[in-house]
Length: 235
Picture (cartoon, rainbow, N blue to C red):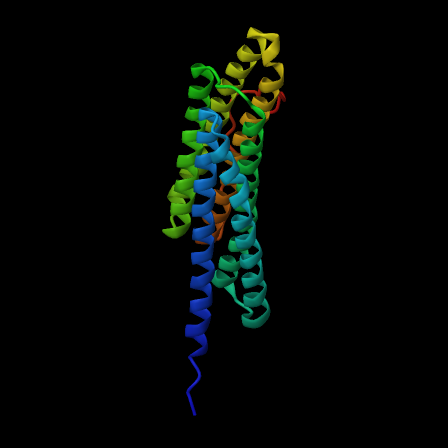
């Protein structure tokens, strides 16, 4: 008779598979967001189509991870740190799925813009986009390395994302005011900018989840926020 694999080993392999899937999902989100920013800045509709079409890959990963978590909890009844691993993976996959959706939304707005945007505007979008890309890479690194320090750094830098978002919105408003024909495109760009800020918020969520995963405690205090939003008045 063939000996069954050791239960603990099998369980550890399932946890590792779950973690690997989450990291791969995060890599797909990195690519989607990076391409969405390139598409809007270069008015590249073909690249925007790629972002839109590839969103199903991210959605499928969320479904797969959710099923893996359900199976682990139902069949293995994890305790303590292992339970934190599974619950964190579930929450992270939800936030990463939203990152993918928001990148797709940016790509959809890009396809509605039919002309090259002013350099001042694209440079502003690139600045905040680059910071958010770094935040996304860092928060995934914090998960891979189980580093609460990296997670806390991402959490604290959300204020910088807010401030660069507001600077970007100022450029969009200038664009709106410069010519009445820019109103339609300007409205799309306001949504693009807000979507970038929302991605930053989801990455802050992930940072909080990683911090809790490693330390078993939550980050203390209110989330750092930038200056008052020009469009919504939120803080």
